[in-house]
Length: 222
Image (cartoon, rainbow, N blue to C red; front, side, top):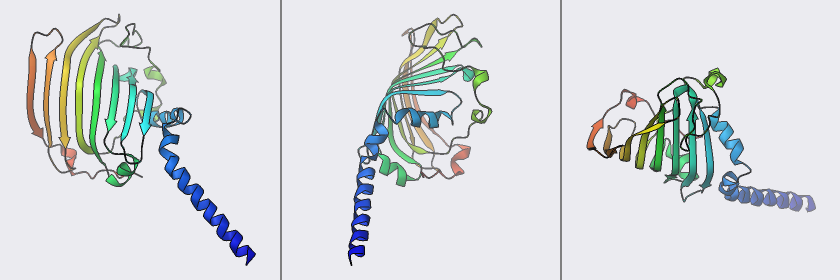
């Protein structure tokens, strides 16, 4: 009888401990202690290097990240994002099967380098590269990305080019884009507006496009 009570007590204790860990999982993932490990795992799947200043993860309240930097010297690309907001929390992403919901990208800046000398990056917008093209592992080249869908909203973006001496030219600014992919077999609709870097002109438009890959099924989250 005593053994049965001890076993039940142990099981109850393990169950409570498991529930506490699950409940605290978003806070654990959001902590600075675990962030380097998560970023390292993500970077193994990317051609470049991703950096993240801070993030906040919740089960049901959405996911937010601040100070994102993606540096890919092999592609001559540097992307910076002030903030990214994902509508779904961890639970929503786990059961969504590839449907991300609404994703907002605030103040993104993309710098394209016009020379192979991508190591010369002297301006504030272009920090030193984290690695050279030769240092990128072979398994990270030609990475395949699974199909996801949802609504993407880019707010106040900018596109720049940079020469080998680090001088940057703003090609487009005040870029706003709404991209809506409702499902893997539905056409992608878009609406955008932008202003030229020298403020001499503006462009806007809307439309839809059906990708050849739309017949592929979205990848389910583990």
